[in-house]
Length: 208
Image (tube, rainbow, N blue to C red):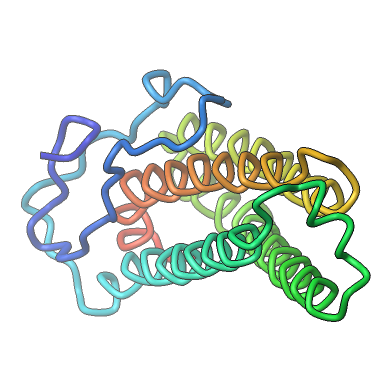
């Protein structure tokens, strides 16, 4: 049974990644119970290999983002693990090791933020307008996904600000961890919701 109350057609043979409900941050940017859902698809519909590939492509792209997010979290944990006292960490930023660690963390996180932003921009400018035209009943779901894209953009900016705070503020380590936790919660929740709602329409209607 899908999280929205209905199963995807057996012939689709694409499995959206479920949201296991784990949350790391106390902050909530949206009410997941208010998310709209697509109309249950025809359970008897048969999909061609090409159509199934269209739906699977979204999952594959999202899996890459999930893997990259896990790496971001790993890098943050590695850097902050040695900073038992944020004040002491700040006093050592001029040492070669700290400078290298901070540069690696900043470069990696900023690069990941750009990847997520680019992915969402492509969806907003190409995929979503196509789906709206092809099936107007999808509009409430697509509108919601776009709103979540904007919210995630703000979270990404918060990660960028936390990277600065990491080397300039006494509580920089805590702030950075909080920012990455919020990114984890919002992004994983969003990716699962998007897959659950759009893998079937993408198979049926195509990417563009």
